[in-house]
Image (cartoon, one colour):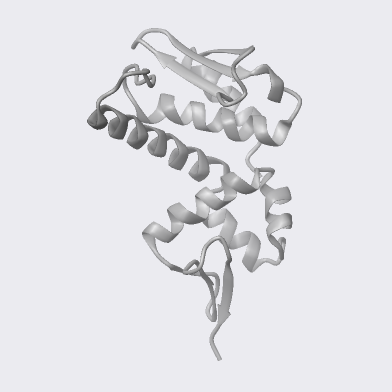
Length: 168
């Protein structure tokens, strides 16, 4: 498992200010940057939910790692602006899933039989189910079949269901 402290280290080493704030529940996290000043706000309601906190924090760090400028959604936006913001959200989420759930570590955990169920995967990597499903969707966009060992493959054709296929 990638420890939450690794995310905190990125924040500290990058000079990002992180605060817990009373955000609307629909806004679990928020990232702002003007180029010189970087701010991550985390909804104080999730402060004690470590699993949710670390997935939201990873996504907000993902914004820092993948985007430039302020792309806060506005009330009145034209369609192309909304699409641009959605693309940046997906980039940050992809970064976050790759950071907390590296594909190689996921496949190794399955191969080494450290995990056998989705719940065990969630516990092993200490992420939410929604976050894990996003990871699988990103993986499926790259390939639908991932080799686990010489005969076994993780098949992602029917998400959110997963299959491990074994050649005979």
